[in-house]
Amino acid sequence: MSNGQLQLVLFITGDGTRGQRAVGNLRNLCSGVLSDRCHYEIVDVLEQPDRAEASRIMATPTLVKTSPVPDRRVIGDLSNADDVLAALEIDV
Amino acid sequence: MTDATRVHDRAIGKVATGIPGFDHIASGGLPAGRTTLVSGSAGSAKTLMAAQFLAEGIKQFGEPGVFVTFEESAEDLRRNLASFGWDIQAWEEQGLWAFVDASPDPEISSVVLGEYDLGGLMARVGYAVQRVGATRLSMDSLGAVFNQFAQTSSTRREMFRVAAHLKKLGVTALMTSERRQEYGEIARYGVEEFVADNVVILRNLLEEEKRRRTIEILKFRGTEHHKGEYPFSIVNGEGMACIPLSALELSQGSTSKRITSGSPDLDTMCGGGFFRDSIILISGATGTGKTLMATEFLQGGISQGERCLLFAFEESRDQFTRNAQGWGMDVRAMEESDQLRVICDYPESAGIEDHLLAMKREIDEFRPDRIAVDSLSALERIATIRGFRQFVIGLTSYVKQQKVAGLFTAATPQLFGGSSVTESHISTITDSIILLRYVETEGEIRRGITVLKMRGSPHDRGVKEFRIDGSGMHIGRGFGNVVGIVSGNPQHLDVG
Image (cartoon, rainbow over all chains, first blue to last red; front, side, top):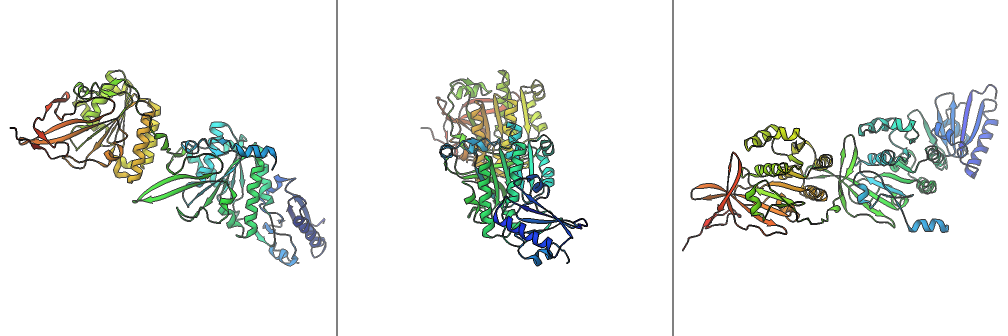
């Protein structure tokens, strides 16, 4: 994580099942194909609505790639890793 | 449902919007703590109404508001709405206005891969409401949400949840939605009307090549409102203003106090002058002396120390001043002493609703004892028949509410006899009708005057001849054995 070139933020609402599924899928992604390349953070919009506002989040779950630019987002529970990586424009 | 909310449901309060005229139509305002859907076609002023609901809340009641925008960016809205005199940025800095900007950001690209909810949006709305302590909220527009997200059942379900969320926040909300046509299904996505118990429709109609805006409250569940379409207008620097016509069910002039018409002869014909709070219609062909009568009416008021207001739609200021001078009235001196105000305007300079609002504003500001309009019929040509009728009713009722005397002139299209559109719209509302006619008799054209109607008073029923000279109008004797003057077919009765 020290050489974290990849910054990801996952926005979820509370502890609903869809959000928790997305959290699990993100963890798998980061410990799997993206091992050591990514730094991720989980934001519950109920606890940190200001973060949702700052990032202009509409839907949850939303995974945001904040770095490197450009800003790319995926909405959904992140169950298909290949589609997620393609949408975020991340090469593995 | 708890007992507390049930009690709340039974008695729904209203929140005054502060939008001119609307609260009257809405019997007080929008249902408090509820969401009202405002549906309209493109360009029907939905966004304006959504913004004005918040702006008037701040300006008139000091109530903070949240504006949720799905279409135009907050930056665009600040700029576009500045033309109505609203400094939104200042209100944001004072913590009275907060945007939730959910408009599409070209820098951000999102891909939907699977199920989602609108939890982010709801959290931001709740956060903004809490941050400024909002009691009002506007959301513009629902359709744009469906443009950003697929039109799936989950989006629909989420919009229901958003509406439920707003109820929980306790705000009085206004939510806009597009519709494809002016009449027919209320909204486009088949969900909106179920989201809100209350529906308002804005229309931007093209009738007889003239634009006409109307507002209609389709339903307010469990609470009162006035039915039907009401015209509204958009005033630069102020926003939208509705024209409630139902205030008009007139309290008839109740006073028995008489005022002078400005002509002692005419006062006699009317049984002692006009009534203080009455509407008088002067109808006649061009050149019969309508403007002169209006002038004398004003002069009569000024001689009694009253304040008089004239709306002139047929003559320029210079023309009017010069003609009045010819009849011995010094317009400039009277204006300087603040007893007289003359407003000259071209009918075509604005829409008919704009004219009505401008006239009301002048009346409010100048507080006259007498009002003259010369001529009402000049405004016929800029309006549809329906629009004109609403204008006439709106103006007369407003004048009546002020309890002042109003004298309106109307030009008849034919030189001899005939009636005007104005007359047919106004005759039942007026208290007095005076006809001026050309009379062809004994090889010359003369002028005749008759008091056709004088509510609540006996009056002279004859047709009298009158002359106009440098000192004004002089009413003489009757035409004797000439009949058919009023209808435009004078005939001499053979005596004997």
